[in-house]
Length: 528
Image (cartoon, rainbow, N blue to C red; front, side, top):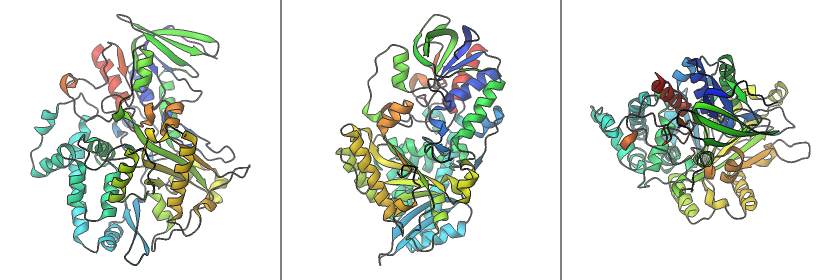
């Protein structure tokens, strides 16, 4: 049933993704009346969880799955019952020794000696570990410089540069802000496998390369390493559903009104109030508000405001998302590494430094890279609560694969055939690393089909409105303001009282809640 409690609100939020929920909670906590519109039946947007494979009681985070950027301050401010858990393994990178034997670089979150010994096995040099630690130190330095500003008004680049006092700070700034990321990687990492591992944080979700003069790889890298000043990617206990549930519960307790199955059609601007018209099952309805917050991509934003929109090439998404349910973990070829240790962290497949350069060039020619670079991880090795007790007892696991260098352009023609081809390439890549056929480890549904789901950039656009399949909504921005952005919250638009409250805002992207927080703060500061 669709029933409005009121016809006028202080704020209307369009889209119930985590950013919209964060914004709604902050505004309601401050005493504002809030209506939140969601076009789907379920809340959460890209952070929703579902039984992807209906025959099994396994609740997968379908589109997003790990948490790094979500500020602890937001969790405290909103008193959210949301928890994350550290993965015991940070990453596993397969490699082969001169004799052709399979090995693996294990970087542990809990055992430094294990990591150091594993790197020595890879490079044969103790200095490799020291240089890698220097890279991490610079990474930590830039994170500490940037992170405190993410929930504040935008500062200028010059303002940040004025904070650079030590030589280490200046070196970190040069390495990650001024110069292409590839230069720092090549300086501090001396093995192809390690270089590739470091570069992945600059490529996940975007189409770029190590020496891209646009520095898109640098911006992407920073988003992946600055979260809460540690950059550690943690597992949400209970899956992303737990984040959505905690935010929805808090919003309801604060009086936010939710309206699901309500598709926003257009926003009619007024001088002091705006009217939002939305479709429900039995027709159209409308409500007015002083402030309208749009938690959606640029295409939807333009449509709501009846303005033209044209996709930009730099906004092109570049990702394949594959969800799997396993009846057991596969045995690996890598000597000395258990499956549980390897799959617990980010498991790199064909992501050597040279291979990533090759795959980028291939995809630039509108050809599917082969081998296909990607990485997988197993949620249930850290948090098994997303599985029923029965599946846990039977040894089932979930596996998520995130493919790189898979831009929108590859799937514009023969979409379904291309999707099938790419899925086969990734299964082949896994098979090359396993002692047994990987397919035998996939659970089967009641019709005998393997439990595997593949999402292309086109699927991400059609299902959750990610323009051109870009998981960040558009090309990632820098963490500082430019021009008249300085001093703003990065959420304002040319229309007073209408705000971007999603990933397309400045400092948006990833599961962060930052744009939602900043949109709410902008409104509250304006009204105070």
